Image: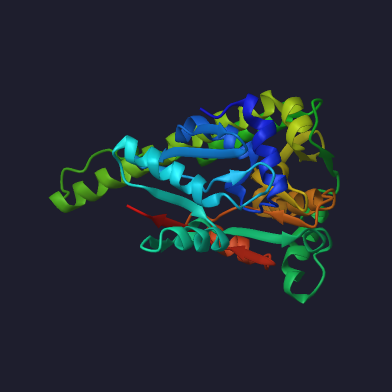
Length: 327
């Protein structure tokens, strides 16, 4: 499983290949390794990864640590051999347009599926910091609304001194966003039809899955905070805390993905600050501290509300993703 000891090689791969897709982030690779049973193999100068999602095994596109793509055909054959050894299908998931073309060059019969829910939303850091122009006037209004209501708010860069404030926000956010299954919230359904009962059972399973995913996410966030100094040194982990008076209201966690790209991994804001413009404030305040040209705010996971929120900031690039099924 990908672990802290792999971070230097993964980070070097991302930097030397100038990767801007969040799934190649060294921090993401390590933080999500347990959730996806991610297995890393380093053979010579090549980084290989396989992981499990939805009960299926997928492979990531292989990368040379020095950015050399001349032997990519051999690297892809290595993945194919591993897939054949496992006796499962061979699919390379979460690949970019350029990587898709390389796959098709060497596996012309590959079936390509576009994955819009995995597309990354990438912004100019300067635009998120200044929010200039008519298109972003609503975001400026949200910030003005927040500052009028909470004139004592302040922003602090994430550090070892305020990590516990981030944990507190995450804990409160989780409580606010943990849903109760319909069956547990209802007194009885004696008059329900079989269709109603099946629908309710399906909705309950969905809620249970959502709650489980949120608990896993909390574990991942705590893993990042537990190892803050290590990640900061090795992968430029950074972020910030938004306070209203002495109360922590929001936080974000990010890291250096590539020389010109900062990747925002998590961003949380609790009530009532969230509805008063807190997300716009933490987004803007953090962007002011970013030194790279771009900020990757990751994917929308196919969620319509998240997609609209990300589009409302008018991304410079929507980095498309694909799955290639070879056999």
